[in-house]
Length: 529
Image (cartoon, rainbow, N blue to C red; front, side, top):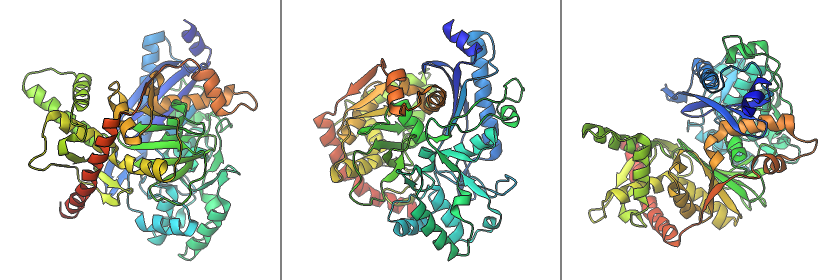
């Protein structure tokens, strides 16, 4: 009844996150309690060598997720809300959405998954002395400049997926600092784009015939807690074509999925970190000191409030693992067994814990797409073993789980072993951690660190952006995001903490020796298949 009253009075915050395979909408009360959720499933398209989603996909997906949320609210509470205290939008980071002055998309949306900007990323990294990943927006823009793409003549602005949706809802060309840090390097002192690097970019671009200042193309940077516009009449109709949703609702800065993951796991303080593991996998560690040198495997980004953060991002995680579970599901169906998918995952994941520590010599590569950390522009999933390997189902599943985090481990080893960065605890979230203790134990072995999973972490990034929306309207005048989260949201939160097991750590290290050798076979597969 209390939640029902808050929804009726509009004392709730709405968070919407556009993930790789699902768009989720979450409604929370003013203390962070999830009141209802809705979702819409979608898939990227591979068109003319580009991973993309169409604007129609985006608009239909937004409406589908919001409509599903309203349906669930009506079923649960008996009515449909017309307003909220605040709204937040987040989405997959990076990528390239380029528009002209009349808001027309000039080229298909190039998502984070595209690994086509190698030359551009390399040149910018050398120019800035700062790591620029292929998926960053600035790498995509420079790639277009190097290739003298015709659309640049009409280019008025670029943004990310979250920035685009926010613009459609508010008519404001702004972006949260965390999402912005995946577009262009951020100066963590000024909380804005790095002015010196922007100047270098402009000079380099002019040498290739591109004369539009970068500052005019990028969205305005805002930090967590800042006001980012109000829902317009057109934005309300886009989200809710029925016309029942009222305009005028304030929105927080649009953020990337990395920032919302940090928020949803209370990992925005120094020496905290989180790992999001689903279609892709990335680790975020809030730095206690600057890195000693440039590492191409490590992105330097920020928290939603602007603190420097190291990010290890890998394009591939559970897709190949999910495909194998699908094979077992198909087999069980042909045998007349009606095994629920979640039960099948639990059984197979738990089997991995009784396999040999090193997977019995079995090794898998989960690359459906390229991986910049290991230097692959394309991927070919592989499963390899020697004639004398211990080929058991338990070892097979353990190898699939290890493979899901193997590339991530290479990046984390740089942070924790080479740079000696300290982390008190990592918080896991995403589908990889749904089976109790299993994903946690594998990650603890990969990182040699304690791993927590909170009950609320399963709410994901949509919950995280809803929290950021709530923070905007609720925070005290000078209350930092980390303090607000600790005081209001996570004070009484429950979590399961798993410590690393030596045998698992040693087994993972031995698996990685085989994994490194297997990458030669992966290279041959990419070149010949």
